Length: 196
Image 1 (tube, rainbow, N blue to C red):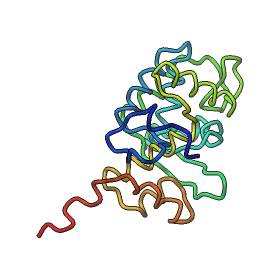
Image 2: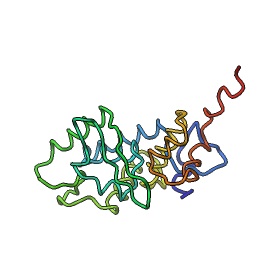
Image 3: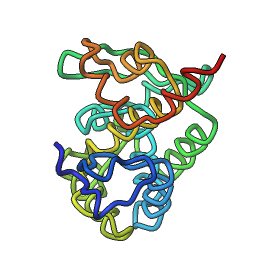
């Protein structure tokens, strides 16, 4: 897991130069998401990666998403966690809702899955690996893996100062030990410790 993205390949202001890096910082995520838009299935790929990042989805969780899991009225997404993790309802931001509507507007099918392959079947984990690799190569990032997007979510939340219990619940971790890793690079957690 530690060799997903190597510090020498992906530069980051928040990375300890002595550690390998397994996430993208927010600036890198923005570059990655913009690159996803340029493919043949740009609307789908952008939405897929945006949702994997924002909701900390594993590959298998992303391919299992159904259209019915999205509530446009309440602006929520039902996240069905796997690997014994806790499922839950997540709010969806406006840019994400617009991206979902844009993608669904391009489809002419009645299939239940949110993400479809070009052959009109459910997208597979293998396909997501390929799409991440292809998008990463256009941005110059090497050794990226889909799980890197989940880690990027955890690190971004920790860097924003979100408390560990909230990050734990967001990512569906049953144990706080799984969540603690995301604070290792967050310098902001020390800000103001000695301020009166």
